[in-house]
Length: 244
Image 1 (tube, rainbow, N blue to C red):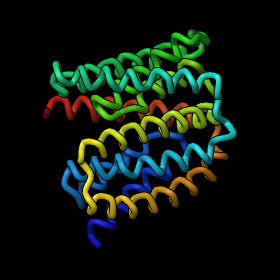
Image 2 (image 1 turned 30 degrees about the horizontal axis):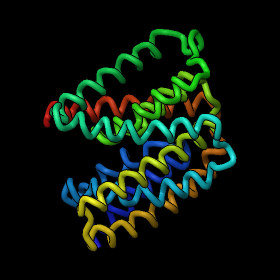
Image 3 (image 1 turned 60 degrees about the vertical axis):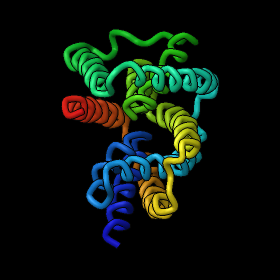
Image 4 (image 1 turned 30 degrees about the vertical axis):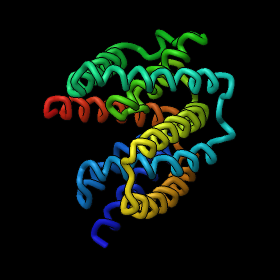
């Protein structure tokens, strides 16, 4: 019951925030899950729960998906995952965590001291391929698939609905790829699958409520959500990198 409570609570909180913003569920849920689970079990549980929860989120925001861009993001995600896996074989994960956190910080500093309206990422297949590949790379190396997508939608100045719809659909694919890879590697146990059902229930409830709240937030609040998410991701990666 103790473990089930924290799994439900963590994913309810993560689901509520992701229902509002379209991202950030795992980053918020994971610290709460570690209160009742060993770190490795908490990570694997989050990966399992992310699958059905991303499907629900993609369904909730399906009307707003920008499909012309979506196909290129999907195509480039897989080679990005492969590249990340190969990189892990030659570089310590701590180096990657610190390096990616510093890149996020540079972007945030530009956003803080510059004007976001001065430059917009041009519409091109190349920018989509780079974003999809970078997301796959970050997902397979440091488990922050949302960081490249968050930067992408901010530079594109997408409205909140288009951003949430496209990101949620992209996250659905990346989470299913992760689950398939981990399942094939024999990382899942019956216990983790049972615990994940509780987390999925919490996330479904949280995302449903968050989706209703998200309809009422304006564009400026959404941008602040995205910047806050990136700041937390940078801090988390840097701290993990130092302690790897």
